[in-house]
Image (tube, rainbow, N blue to C red; front, side, top):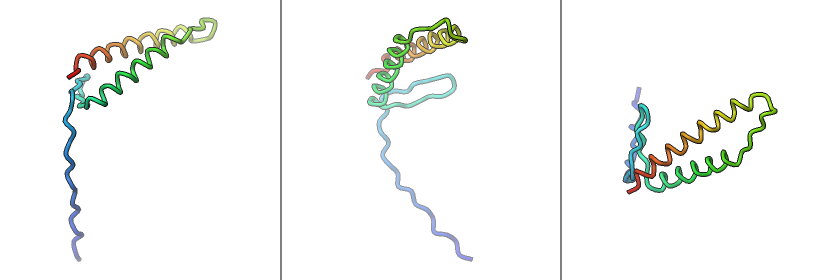
Length: 87
């Protein structure tokens, strides 16, 4: 029985990380363009949440409004953290 030929992997030069974001148990390494994109995406989320008008005549709307407010707080927190990592 013959052995299969070894698989060769070519190493790619890693991008130099612009920042390391530490979350609960996970550290994420992000480049500067990724960080800027995350900030813009989070700002868009905050704008969308601000545009939303609660309709309290609908069932479950109070919970949705609370969840939206909590999500906005988390997004603003993450934006602040990412802004502090600016190189």
